[in-house]
Length: 233
Image: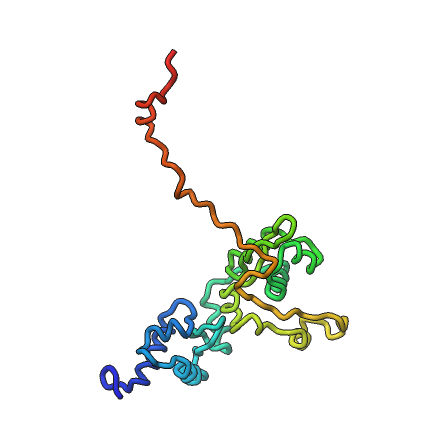
């Protein structure tokens, strides 16, 4: 069966998916892609074929954060980096804090400080929130009801991770030299989870105050006419 201008229907659907990925300003999930295709068309095989077709090109079709996008081939990224604005470099404290949030989320500021062994500057967390890599999740059900922090979809997209579980484990960290191979045998790296639902010991963040139902103030001239002006001597 042929589609528009005699193009086979399967190839037309493939081109549609390709065009949607190209035009999108952010990664798209399969449901969003399928919604623009003819009813009954399976988007999975189309994405698999596109991924294979683009495997050796300058851009690849990749899956990140459970969604799909076009991304510069890894071996070419350094060539294009010079044309991009210099990204804001994170301090060592910010990188350590981000790593703790990623592996231990949901985690509070006090817990971050306990793991790092030093106090965490408020500005460090602000930088991570402004970058979009970290977010405030909720409040811990403990004295003071401290805010809990977690990572975001932007974090996954930036680091090319399909899910938070793709973060390296202890053996990978040792192999990359990030952890001393002679480290204490009891050291473990927690299995990270960015489950969007709040944990049993978390409460939702308070909603922003809404003044939509506040009574309207009367105009000043009406107040004056009602005897609300200056007191008479």
